[in-house]
Image (cartoon, rainbow, N blue to C red; front, top):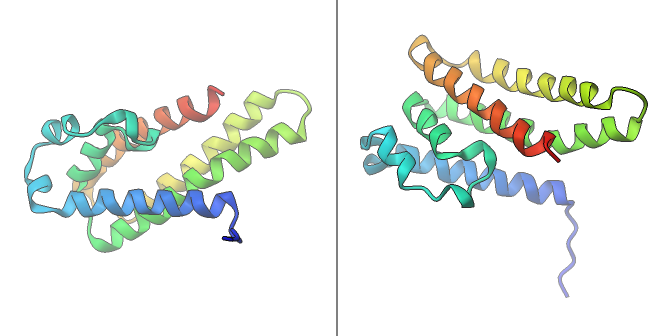
Length: 149
């Protein structure tokens, strides 16, 4: 009999980490890195990806051409942001009171801004345009996924 001693959040973070690792490994693979972003975006089945890994967003990640240090920062910040969203939404709902949607949106925006700030400080000027495009798409995708419930 297998006893699970870890929480759902642990497994969620582990799955997100594995997905990010696979994404970064693929982005550094010579064949994938050599393709243009539209070809890379068209070869992925979007139905099987989480909302923050839509093909158009993956194309921006590949185009950023991050160093190993930047990738580690990105993975860590993304994992923290994505794994904390359900918890902060539930926390605001449990608190009750008035204007819950507004409080939830503020809490989500704080997490998004922390993610942006931690990644942005590691990027150089050439990567900023792709980061801005990725981050805007990320916020839209995550808001649609979590706030539409």
